[in-house]
Image (cartoon, rainbow, N blue to C red):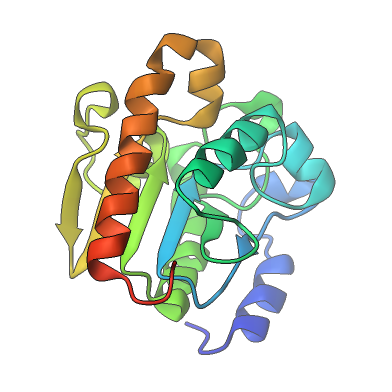
Length: 190
């Protein structure tokens, strides 16, 4: 465990724990305010994220930014966004369990340093790892779970919403629930 942001970031950029490092263009550490009270966790970088070295910058990221904006959240101001794995899985496949295990220490260290009051899991993969292995994202999105004093909620992944736009209203409801919870328990987010 690293006790400061720069040491953690530098060590992560040198990571070669799994084979994903061999095919990455850029490691995608995370983006946002490291003192944020709200943290979003996705599954792993896609093609655009790998090229730019920043999470959620492709079409899914554009949708995420729009949804965040509706509830006064901004990746450059009052939240932090990271992924389960820091390198792009080939062809944007789901990260394998062994890849997640090799990379989870980086994410746990980020969570420890940020110490968010709320974590939002973007999609099934991160929700299964962070909230519970048997989560049913289509039924349990928008529900808050207390995980060792941190409220944690799953919502549908922005890429899934692009594939199935009929799910956008339900996902937007999750963001409204998040906004209400932030107003209830967070001091500095708004």
